[in-house]
Length: 410
Image (cartoon, rainbow, N blue to C red; front, top):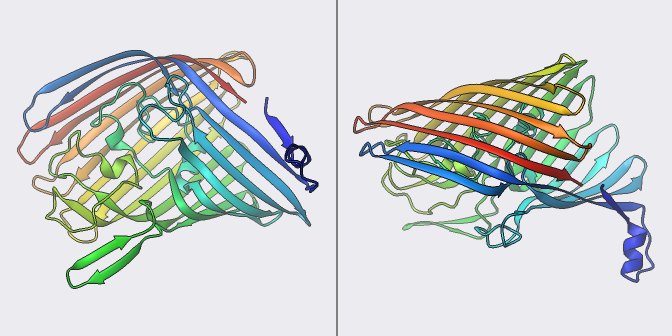
């Protein structure tokens, strides 16, 4: 159960005599179990095939494990202050932040103000409008197995051509100012404005970038509407960033940078493209999703499109779009099931205009012991095909991912 720590209690621990009308909540998720999978990747240049099989006690299949603190203080007159700080954890790894990480992964950290009847604003590392709209309209609740063409991911097994290189949107941005309105006649609006906090010095020999971090600059807007059992959400975000780019003439396991993370490290000098560094990549993303609750089952429809274009040369371009349908509902009072299926494509400018089609599907089930503890079983598959490269080689890849585990929220 969630642990509520009053400000008075904290003050007593700290031997302080100051009191406040505030509280802090400790919350989190622990997800661990068995994870397996198989992948097959065909090298687009040589035609060589690579197969990988994984079988392990894993983690974070249905939900990313995390621990966080959030608090709120009543300021009076319908106003309040709030904060959240949340970190990802890895139950199966020796290091708390994961064996592959140097420290805790910061999922969210922000502080803000809220006014009842108007809305709220916050500053810090936060989720984007597309992430929030997608999470509300995704049948798999953004789990981490492959098979979801909107929220592309894998767990335990990696295949860039079938998994991470097809991530469809930016999930979070740092240095971000956000706002969200209260519901008015069923409508809610939200938005973000983010800066990379870098300084640029222009000289005759070129540009020098100093300070800040590797996050994108840009903005995003979202809107949603609720009418009885019908819900619809849409969001658009436009980000500009430094992104290290591989050759877009060859859709392969190396073409993952712009899709893995919008905050990817990048070069600060313009090299010959493709195959070099891409400066000032304009990354435009749009999402629309809807749900309808029939009572016995809830239906889902999703659409996503993304276009990354260099402002320096038209030879750097990559576009991705995907559509997905799904259902979710209770088979019995404590057995929940869901399923989804979708397809999509990506295209790149260059010789022969490389194009790849992909499809994915996923099924899963929860057995709920209580509102906070459940067992789960899931299976997903993604297949990528019909990618003709500059050399005429047909590239293809496939990956299947399955998991059985236990999850507890607190």
